[in-house]
Length: 340
Image 1 (cartoon, rainbow, N blue to C red):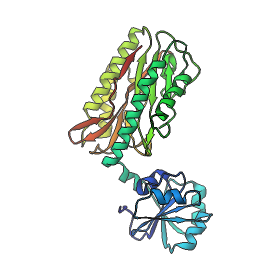
Image 2 (image 1 turned 120 degrees about the horizontal axis):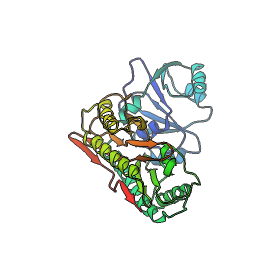
Image 3 (image 1 turned 135 degrees about the vertical axis):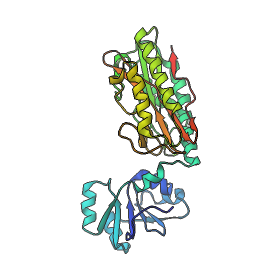
Image 4 (image 1 turned 180 degrees about the horizontal axis):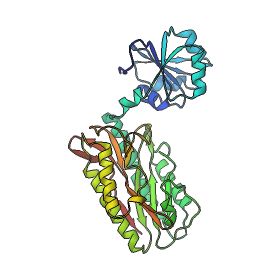
């Protein structure tokens, strides 16, 4: 793959592990990658040498380095000007400065990752399928007095035994008034009649993430809760129906946000409409008032409007979608709301 780096740069040091995986297929948690316009050289320590040689693409050279890494690069590679990812820790940057003439580059690899290949979409879809089957199985464990933590643990167990590598993020399983915390953490709060439950969950397959949010109602819920659920369902449909190549991410967010505002709940929708998903759970594009650019075919994004009423409940519904020329392919297959 040819990366878009400025003329005059002889080497580009890549340190972000998701970018390294994208370019090499190496799944370990620590490595350094040197791009010199001719080839990719993956530098790993002795813990990962065998793994790297088994995993990487055939055009990637694997080299075992002896720490410290900066000294190894300086001594073994004739680098005139070294470019680096501007997201590196400042302490690492200071050490690089002692050895090289440096040029920071921003999101060079991330720009390549925005549009997904078919094999990437397949991994994401598989992860989503595992998540959904596991969620449906977890519904069997919902009963009065079960805790948020217990259901979260059961959901993780169901995913792991179906092949999920790890949780895509810390699951959000919240009952009743705790659902008004958009990113709350599961607690020992016990389930009771009339609770609205938010499940936000996902797993990882071959490094690729899934993301899904569903609502479960337990017993008889309030009329207000029923109304808010309908509004969020309709708002999400507006968002999904609006997806197609060329649509501005800001415009799509605004369209859904205005609908929720018209229904009287604008101030209670306090996060972005959605985000890209891939090797990271949150990546570009961002469907938000501060987002940039337009949707393009091959992007994988979430659409997840929500309404959060402090002291009462919260409702969020989230699907995972592939952007296509004239619409969206929904990777989420299960119902949006479940009644128990």
